[in-house]
Length: 207
Ligand SMILES: N[C@@H](CCC(=O)N[C@@H](CS)C(=O)NCC(=O)O)C(=O)O
Image (cartoon, rainbow, N blue to C red):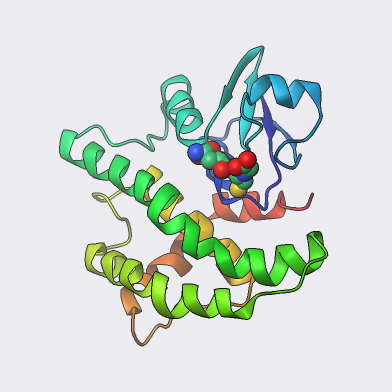
């Protein structure tokens, strides 16, 4: 299986973590979004990352890919079987990809991408707005949801992958979760990012 997309992308990381958890061999091609590579373009109709090519079967979108991987490589399960747990896991996946992603990626875009990859200056006011205004209600929400090592039931799942993935970029941008204000979230994210699968995905980020 070929995985397209730079490992700096939180969405690509979802796929790399899932593959590592399931121990599925793959070749990582760390292209940027909208890369002119025709094979990547064929796999990603909108030019977004991630996309995969699994022996000629092409698919884009991190959540679609995670569900595909779940059916093709069911063990270990990353999608809960219990209906209520499944519903909550899908909710967290959507929450991570939509509400959380936007403000969580701001410090990385402003402090890492703009100066180092785009030749543009950092907008610290945008970082301050994300950290002081946009993220606290979302962190409050997550703090209320955390009751153990995992977000859903007693097993690691797509919920944990989708919520934790963007915090890797958050940390790269020297942003931190205030452990005094959000102790459960801070400890939970540290634990999830320390998993070998996240470490493997982090090692693949260069490119
Ligand atoms: N819903 C998509 C979102 C993927 C996405 O937006 N990836 C970003 C990179 S982190 C991208 O390709 N951006 C380029 C664009 O939006 O045109 C997924 O889950 O894979």
